[in-house]
Length: 287
Image 1 (cartoon, rainbow, N blue to C red):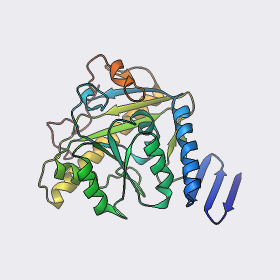
Image 2: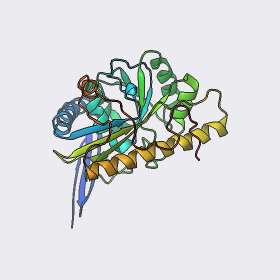
Image 3: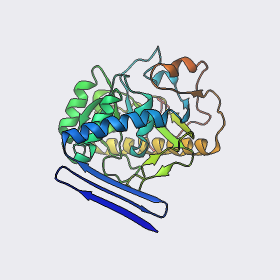
């Protein structure tokens, strides 16, 4: 069974289809009024929707959380593109700049991210990448950065080299964040974009700082790219298993937006099992 609807006009184009249990949605909005209106609605929906989700986090080192009173930055936070909703909701207004594509499809997300309390840098490995890297370098003097390293076009869960190059060049550690939801809805997009069910569980497993050596050549960057990709996939798979199973873990805590989370993390946080190469004293080279 398949249902599809297409609306076209001078300022916007929307297509929506549902085939069996797969959802596909694409939208191109060019009118600034439409972008603003959609962004306001999206930001409000994210706050209300994600506010019903029960989230817990397990840190390799709780000091990587930008709301912690002993946080010392900056950091480069990375997570897969499909899971962008949860960090948008949880860590706005934390002095973090987000890298987004220059593509028109990201115009609404640009506005939403700003409304949720993030700085925004536009660019990607496809369009405006060099300019974006320069702006991120400038921002890193006073802000942490966040990148979805498989965006904006994939392949899904394959890490682009940009975040590794940036960490090596700026001597800023990477923090890998794996997110998982309990049986989320998935869009029919390249990343299988995840939408948590209202009232469901979400889980995050966060690495220790990952330090990338400076002055790496192309082969060195690729070696560390592979290592960071392995860490992020490990954490993401672990978070998904945890979300599905539920329950508590040693040293985990409830997490809320902004300042609330650090007050709830009152014990030492150590991963039950270290992901490969995630320790800051270890290389990100694959074993």
